[in-house]
Image 1 (cartoon, rainbow, N blue to C red):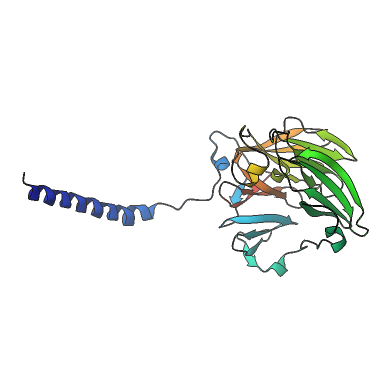
Image 2 (image 1 turned 135 degrees about the horizontal axis):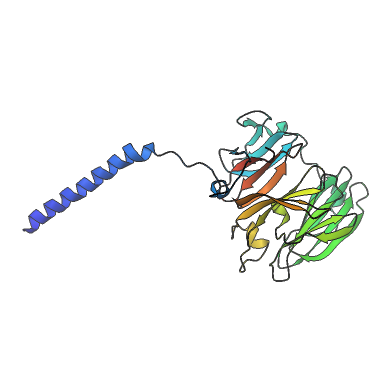
Length: 294
């Protein structure tokens, strides 16, 4: 075979491959349904599950919360949304349409000699201040009288400290790690008495209180990486987890598993009667709604 004949055959074969690829792309690939924002937990084989679930957002979500039975959330473009109770799809709203916006922290509180802290309102006249969490340094938790700016230290010396106050503003849970930034534990506090929640290794960013200020809903990772520094690597998105969704009675210690292998989730919240839970999938960035009652 001459070189000329060889090159002619090569050009013909290459042309056939290009034409075949174009036919596949325009006629077959376009017929493939678009991927849905399902998290890994919703396709777990052999899992008997009576819960109803549904994605709410059509894009990546920054944060979300319930107000009564309405869901309010914001996306990465800065747009705010509202999914009203009974409606199928959320509607865009302006910031003015968000009920109970975050209250301003009084200047007298901001000027307190505290560094690298996060302020949160927990009661009409009480604010919590907590150190920014890191597994490299011990953190502290204070409560502050919003009128007098009087400071009271509640917790000190806990590595990776994070706290989540209950709706009543009195009960709270906190998560902490050991001095190596490993092995997160969750501790419930009521009337000044602290009690570890046994065999419940998670952080407060994966939890939400029920409206009774007793029951806690938490996504609990099946395992944590031994090489991770917690919670630092978690917030840097340097690790992902596979979570099981649990409820726990912080008074009796009774635990119930609600959903297995739900993926890596956070930003949990419940509606007015705790029949519906929302969360953000850290795997997809989408917001989901999970019905907790049949």
